[in-house]
Amino acid sequence: MAGFTEATIWNLAFWDGSGVVWPDADTLVGTTMGIVRRQLERLGVPQREEVVTRADLPSLTGAVVMNSWSPGVAVGRMEALELPEALEFVELLHRAYGAEPLELPCG
Image (tube, rainbow, N blue to C red):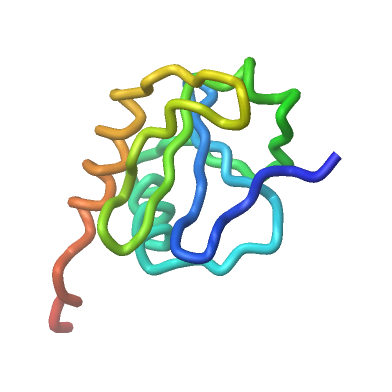
């Protein structure tokens, strides 16, 4: 069974209750995704890549899409399955994105 992946203008991420699950699929790492991943690592938030299929959705506690406009917009439904709202996940992603320095420190 094929797993979920990105679309043309957004990346997809899932929350398992304690860490971020990034779809293990052909992905173009967008700028926002790169910032979020880097800052989640700095914050000590567990992250992993794995194939995510429809069968996995009931065990996940949230999903978001991210792009150049937002580091996280909650996904309420995938196919016919409703997903939890995951406000804490969305807030975590926004906090991580906001932690990125606006410019490189002069050295």
